[in-house]
Amino acid sequence: MMLMRYLFVVSLVCGIAEIAHADTDGGIKKLEAGDIRGAVDAFESAYETGDPDGAFYIGRLFEMGLGTDQDMRRAAALYAVASEKGSLKAQNRLGLMYLNGTFVLQDYARAAELICQAAEGGYPNGLFNCGLLYAEGKGVDQDPVKAAGYWQEAAADGHVAAINYLAMAYRDGEGVAADPEEAFRQFSITAAAGNPLGLLEVARAYEAGVGVEPDIAMAYAYANLAAVRGLDEARLLRDRLETRMDPQSLETAQAFSRTWKAVPIGSAG
Image (cartoon, rainbow, N blue to C red; front, top):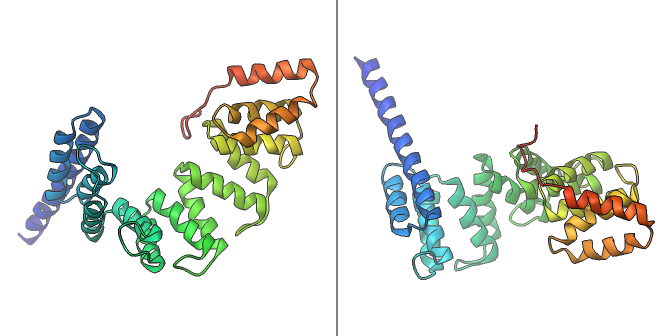
């Protein structure tokens, strides 16, 4: 009899979790479709059935001023409610507000507590931001090794900024042993997805022959791709490289840039 009651409770809890998740997903779809009122209703339903992310998403609407006047204080209050209920997204977002002193007291210790709590829950943005806190020594003792460890976890989940920061760690030997080849490999991942910083760093690596064989044409091609995405440094690099190239190499490089297509992280192969 006790076993049957236990199984009933487990089934009920799992069912509520599924309903809550469905409500949250439904709210996001309604938001994408421009149905703000429908989205709010779905998020409220999600929260009431046990998904704290419902309150987080309503907080985001107030923070961004979508369907309502922007209200940062109300957003912070909703993040606090969702955070206490275990929303990793809310913990990370509220932590960033404490980090920057945005409508709450600036408090690095509280920021680190919240952000790294989200990180311990496996939330990629939390992992990345917790890594930044350890890299900078804000709210925690500075520890480049821990920073790199958090970025490695987030990078494994395809977090673009974490991959770039991990690449920089390998490039500079911060928290990990310097490894130019690994740095190039990591930057190549974000470059392939069209990330401007990844494209620029790949271009620089090809120019200098660091982590890869030097190739001025490839350096130009990647700098060209980064420049069109608005990086002035890439434009300057591209123009400087052009002065070192013959017409055939320049034509080859521009053809590469013209036919290149971004591939989202995790979709290759």
